[in-house]
Length: 163
Image (tube, rainbow, N blue to C red; front, side, top):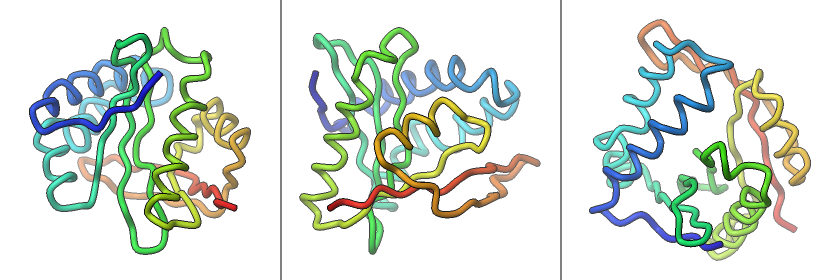
């Protein structure tokens, strides 16, 4: 397994991968309309470019046997590394790839001198919440965020303390 940073010429490929994964993953929690809206707002090619150029984001492909099986996005904040996205294709879940990605994200946070990693997770996303708890993240707060078009994100804020 390996992690490679997404190059500018690969952003279109990343957006396509995100669209595929989001529609498969979120269909049991969100409506198709909200998934379409969120993909366009947060994971379309123009949105990803905006995040990279203006919001301190970096995106990485996760590869297993040279296949791009997932991705993650991070953003450097003042006091912590924000893990914005971490997604795997369905057929690559429950194989230790998520754990591998988390370990790499911790390494990245360490390289920037951060003492913590934060993320948000949908309150109804029980499997993911359980996974992050297993990786020693803790729920530290909750947030309801209006994302427009009549939709909200109802999330827990989770944090990993780097020792």
